[in-house]
Image (tube, rainbow, N blue to C red):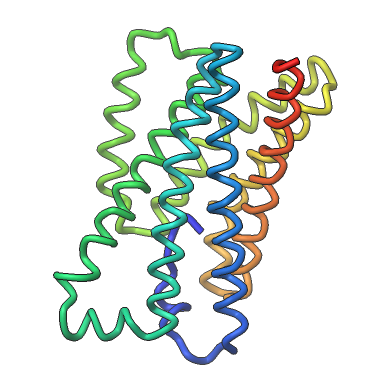
Length: 229
């Protein structure tokens, strides 16, 4: 969902349902990501905790990158992308690719923000250096699907470990759901390795990510509902 597999999307050896199932899952991911972003914004206004502000910005960027992805995927499937690539690529498709990749770099920076908040190192005056190098690495790796996903998985692994430790401390259901949500996001990026050998993992990865987003939305809804009262 957060990356485009052009080999699969442009290939014609798979039935049409394969591509439209992927597009449907991705579109659901857009809706859920925007819902998480909205609840993050509402929760931040009530609770004033930094992590909810990062939920707002992070999942807004995530949702926008997913939306650009869906548009590109559907364009490719309907044959429009091939026409633009052959005839008028610079005028029509290049801006969409550019916006998509800018959002992907934003997603990386959002992961850093969430990792900083959850690991409680956000007050460090050296944090800007981490952002700087993440941006540099993001610019370098965004054109390499494997490197982008592996770097994203590394960032998410810190969040998974921290949320799991928090769950062990309190055995709280919401903490468990949060940990599982980020673990699903971690698996989404990690399973890109299997997608190369088994194309069905293109659907599996996106489904796992959607499950993670729904878990996170459920948790955030409970927290927001409780704090609102």
